[in-house]
Image: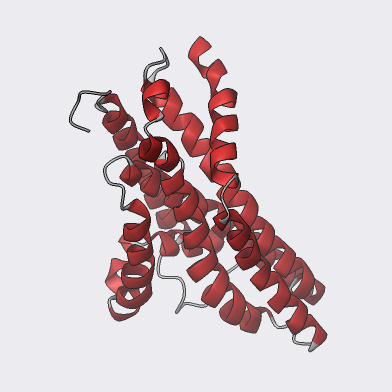
Length: 249
């Protein structure tokens, strides 16, 4: 159990790596977009839950902001260390690999959840909460969707980053092709869509339109849990087989 004590230190280094890049500023600006749109809706007097959920939450927040932020943080948790070779110093320490994975994953998850949930929460506070109790529930549902989606995306693409340096490119392709184009044409792939896990989780609090949610909340939570556990187990297995200098990786 003493190995768990190193988690804060690994997390601190990971936070610095992920936040020390210029792209973080771009992500913050992207996260501000739903908030600015909420202000515009409020100024225009359009306090309509369904309209706001479709035009802002569904179209921008959960389709663009959530996957992009979480994929960037997830794929970047080990990215810098792998690229510059400093991962060897981490692997050379007598720390169980699962502890390293847990610390990296938690760090990326915290950042992704903080940014996406803050965006969804602020935008909901501005335009949905004034609509009454339904608006409060819709806002809470959107925040929950950000949490579930962020955890899933980070877990999957953190694991993938240990297999390939193109995890970010694959992630963007997954976001645009699989969850963008194919999910519209082939509704049956909902069971393999993180976006649908997030939307299904949100429906546990507030019932979203049927055309945007294809999974029940119970199914969404179950599949999300399976994905996260499987991804972190695979990531740990892969890190245990990472070669130090002179190896094949």
